[in-house]
Length: 76
Image (tube, rainbow, N blue to C red; front, side, top):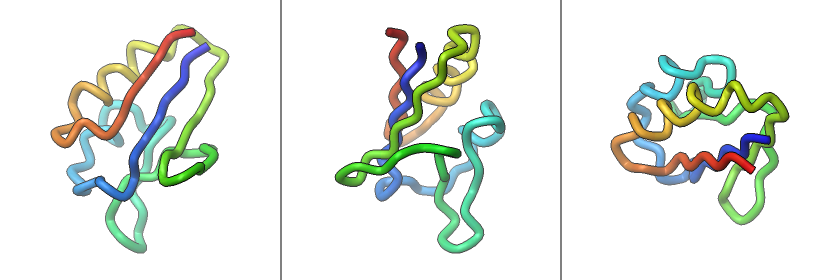
């Protein structure tokens, strides 16, 4: 299982995550920040659990490309 976590309030809207993992991230038209699609919010952290382990590399690329390091990925 892959767990992706996003601290959306710190997003600067660079769009790298959307370019690298468009199946999981999109940009909000309201505020220009990224949205972790189908995630659950808790205390400012948005979390998504994916059962397909093959998606880890894609999500990891997006996390590593983030200039403010607000995306984390875990393989559990």
